[in-house]
View (cartoon, helix red, strand yellow):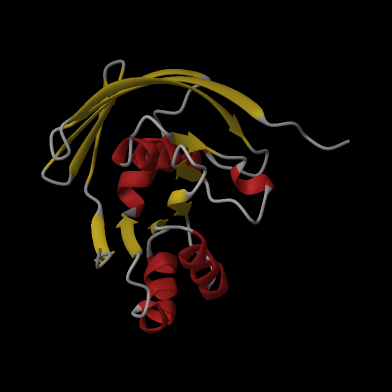
Length: 182
């Protein structure tokens, strides 16, 4: 019998001073049986970094043709495609063809470094692609915040991210490896 997804209830308060976005999102997030706490928390940080009224979590790991997070226009056009981890060159190419803007949040330490070295030259032609790396230390600290019911406060200023839950605070310093040329 297949394992079922674990449901997480998240109240995500985003204060993004860089984009002047201040909103609280009540999210019900399904954590796939193969998904780690680290990946779940990276998903939540990626959501906070791109928070918008139309931004949505998707089925994620359970489907190959959907990103982890997306934003569609009112006319159902794919405006933003957010992928996590280390997608193949083929997946990056297909994503860039489907959405106005694609953001990949890579993580995993040396594995992410090796992935980027392998793929970066083939991504130069994608003007709508942004690649941001999260350090292994930051993501493992984030994983410690994971709980079935979370109230997270995310403050973003000058590209730096502070995630607080209860009495714990984790600082995340995203490093932009490729900027979208839009």
